[in-house]
Image (cartoon, rainbow, N blue to C red; front, top):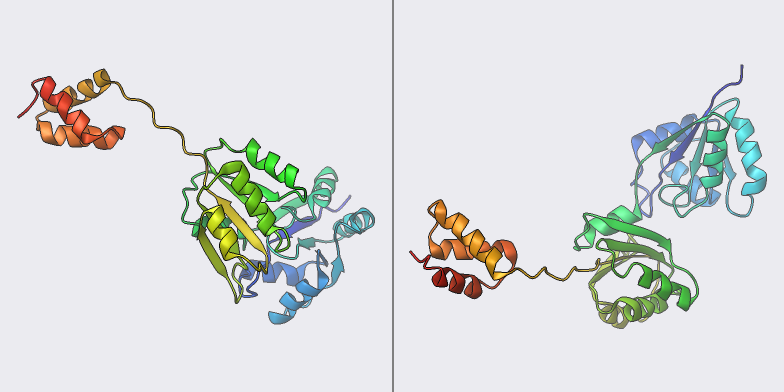
Length: 277
């Protein structure tokens, strides 16, 4: 009977080598094989934590040849997949191996951990109940602007990765497509020179004159225009509050707060209705 192995997708630190889970270290030390996007980075992590493992390269250049080898390894044991940083198969190699493992009936198990996306969103200071991750931006200016334009009306924040060589061009294209929206430009997250700049695209361009390191950018989502509230709706809301004993002044303040309408206008309507008191 064919043995079913487990392919572990192990999140690794995005900078600080201490940002790795105990479970990740345990699994990396027990699997038959660790497939790594960058073997040097992985061996540095393992060495730091005293973990011994057999590590082989798995990246965009050799995945066609390496995938069958890893599939064979899964028939006799478990395999771990790690990227250079963060979670494999998310803007990093791994999708092809995951689909091959699933097609062959193997188990695929994620081991969560450090994430540049989540770290940037959390620290951005921007509304992000929902957000869209766009991954690495296109290299061409027109394609970048088209991408930003496509999400111009999205209510949620946008999150992108960019290299230091193109971050200024990306900020300029973002400004051209979306205007002066608030953003957070996160550089070298969790590393010694971590920096989070909050402002507008124009301010970010002026700040990052000689950009270095890896960048994660969080852009504020589109702000919907406030709905126009009619006088009849305001009067109805006032009457409802007055009916339960709320004073005219307090009712006007509450309705103004809930609708975003100027308090002066709401109070004037309450006077017209003879609802003072």
